[in-house]
Image 1 (cartoon, rainbow, N blue to C red):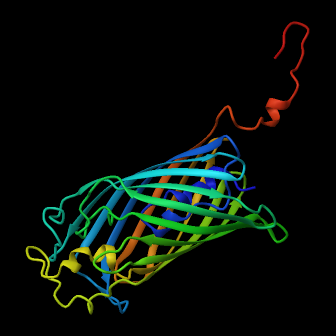
Image 2: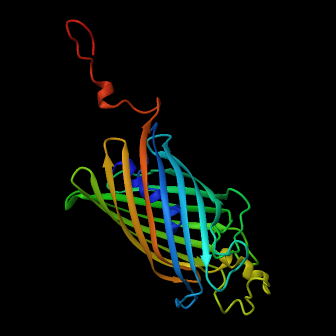
Image 3: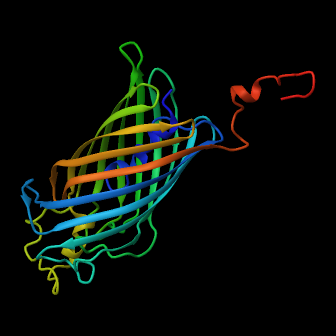
Length: 321
C-alpha cells in the first residue's frame, strides 16, 4: 500500500492544475495528514492562442499552502487547503497599478474543499471525487501578478491508482481526470478539462522518486489576441472583456515535472518537486515551478487499533509493561 504522506505531496501543489486532483488512495478511518508547502513559480513568457511565446514581462510568485486530509471512513476522505500567495510583475505592460508596479502583492487565495470515495480497491483503486473552490476574499484578478482568478469552481472527477506488483513491486502509478465548472464571465462559460498522471518508484525504505504530468484544456472561452481587438491596458482598458481575460480565456497547458519524497521516521515526510510548462495557449509559460514542503501523519481516537495496540501486555514478576 502507498504511504499516505507520500501521495499527499501531489495534492498540495496549488498553482498547477493538479491542485484539483485528490489522490486515488484515501486515508484509513480516523487517520489524516497535515502538510505545509512552499511554492516558488517563475513565468518568463506569455502564450498566444497559436502557442507562440511572447516576452511582455516576467512574473514571480511565491506562496505557502496549508492543507489537511482526513479519513472519515476507510473509503471516504475529506480535504481542505488554503494558499497564501504573493506575486510581482516586472515589465513594460502592466495590467493594473499598483498590483503590477514591480513589488510583491498578495494575501490568501482560494479555499479548496474536497470529498472522495473509493469505490474499488483491487486490482486498481478507483476513487470519484468532488472539489469546491471558493475565493477566500474579493482579491484583484486583473493583473499579471494576481494571486488567482477569483472564481468559484466545482470540479467533478475520478482518480485511479495501482502497483506494478508482478514487474516492479516498488513502483506505483496514478491518473486523474477532473471537469471544472465555473460561472459565466462576460458572456462565456470557460469550463475546464484537467488530466494528471503520476508515477513513482521507492528506492530503499525512505526515498521515493516521482514523475508527473498534467494538462488543461478549456472549452468555450476567448482566444488571445484575435478575440480582443482593443486590449488596451493600464491606464485605460477599452474592452471590458479584456479586464476578465484571465477568468474567461481558453487557457490550455501541458506541464511536466519530477521530484522526490523522503520519509523521516513513521510520521514525517519531506518532499520537493520541480515543473516546467512544455506547451500552452492563452496563458502563462511557467519556466520553473518549485514546490517543497513537509507533511505529518496523525491518528485520532476513531482510528482503527494498530498491531501494537492489539498485542497482549508483557507480564513481569513485578509490574505490567
